[in-house]
Image (cartoon, helix red, strand yellow):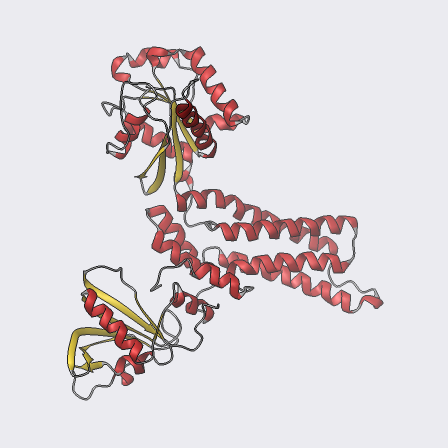
Length: 470
C-alpha cells in the first residue's frame, strides 16, 4: 500500500517522546492553518490565525471545547516558505505527554491525519524544496553522532555533490539528444555527435565518477565509524587497552589466558571522529572449541577493519618472532598488498616493566610502532595520534563532495559500468542506438541519486526509514 497521503493535511510530534519542558507538533497541508485556527484562541483581541503572515509567532491558548488545554506558541509558515513547501503550523506546547496526546487527538478530530515516518521530508522532496540526496541527508544529520559525520551530512544537505551529479547528468543528456537526433535522420547518414568529442567527454565523466566513488570509502567511514580491531596473543593487554581507551571496565581483565572468547565492541570519539574498537580473542592454537571459534572471529573482524592494533608483550617476543606473528596474521587475512602494513599499528604494551630505549632498539625496523602501558595509561596520546594518522581522516576535506550513502554509491557504480560500455562501443564502432541505450542507462542511474528519476517504491523504501515527525 502506498505511503503517500496526497492532498491530506498531516500532523505529528517533531520533538522526542518522553516528558520535557516543551513539545512541538507540526501540521502541514492545505488546511493546516484552518485546522489549527479551529482550536486556537489568541490573546490578542480580534486576531485570526487565518490572517497571520508567514514566519510569525503567536501566543494564545488551545481550547478543547470550552476547556483550556494549554497555553502555546503558534508559528505560521505559509507556502512555499516552509520546510515542506506547504502551509505549515508548528504548535509549541508544554512537554506533558498528556497535553501532546490530546493536541494530536484534537487535530485529528478536525481532519488532520497522523504523518507517516519521513512524510514531512517526503513532501519537501515532492514539492521541490530538496532533491532526493538532500532529503536523505536530513536523516543522516539526525543520526550523526560526531562532528565529522554531521559536517559531511550538512554538506550533502546543502547540495554538496548533488550539483555535481546534475552537471554530469546534463552533459550526458546533451550527447544522448544528439545521438537520438542521428537516429531520427538515420537514412540521411548525418552525424550530429562527434565521436571523438563524445569519447573525450565520457572519459572525463568517468574520472569524476571514480573520484566520487573513491570518496565513498571515506564518507562511509565518517558516517558509520572507523572499525579498529585490537588483536594479539593472549594476555598481552588487549582488554586492558580497550577499557583504558573508552575509560570504562567494559572487558573482563584476568591473568588467565583466553579470558576473552568473543568480540567486544565499543565506540570512542576522537577529535570529532568516531572509532569503533573491537576487542578480540587472543590468537593462538587451542583445543578449546569455544576459544577456537573466538580466534576465528578475530580473523573475520580483522579482515573487515580499517585499522588493526596488534599488541605484543616485549617480555615474551623479539623482532624475529614478531615478524613471524605479523606475517601469520596477514596470511590469515589474505593481506598480500604491501600497503596493508600501513594499517597495522604495532603496540609494545606493558612499557612500565621495561626500558623503552631497549624496546626501540629491538624493534627499530618496524614502522607504526607505539610503546605504551595500557595499565598505567602512559603514551596513550601517541596511540591516539597514530590512529588519526593511519586512518587518514584528518586529511579529509569536509568541504569537498563526499558520498556517504550506499544507494548513491551503487548508482554511481552502475553509471560507471554503462559509460565503460559506451567507450568500448565507440572503439568498436557499434551502432548509435546501442551507444544511446548505454548513455540513457547512465543518465537514469545518476537521476536515481537526486530523484530526477524515481519510483514510488524507491521513495517508499527511503522515507520509511525516517523517524515520525521528520
